[in-house]
Picture 1 (cartoon, rainbow, N blue to C red):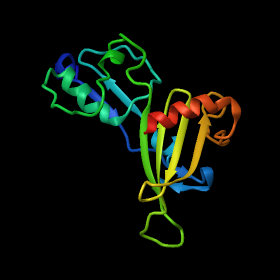
Picture 2: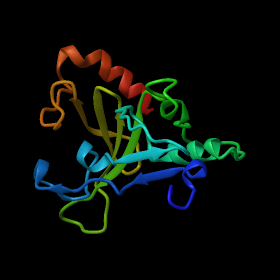
Picture 3: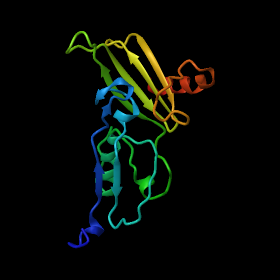
Picture 4: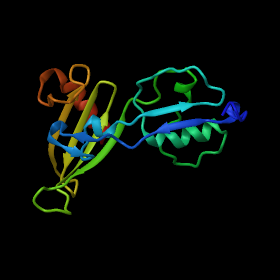
Length: 176
């Protein structure tokens, strides 16, 4: 970009597909609401940007459109989902949202092509909460809660732990 004199008016975005299990949680491929599947790399360099900094704020890929539209001074349509990440990029704040949502079905292993349940996850800086619902969304079939402060690999479901009940209620409400 510098060689062609484009660095001062080009915004660069790098992101990737979501993760891939290689036996973690006894899973293979892209099949879950776990962090390994839901998390993606995201690098945004604004025009003229040279200083590298990192931020582990919770964001979603649907935040890219409003970010690019604002950075390029384009109008944003009404009802647009997502939040511009420019305040983070411009170092005005360390986060623009408190949670990110993920959805992934759990297929039954005995009936290929059908859905056993749908998993809805909400990820905050500290927790990932997943609620497994029946396909008609009338029943909660199971819940998972992982405390990333002490368990970043999501290996211990603490949904029943007394010390996490307040967070659990907040996450349930956020998911609704």
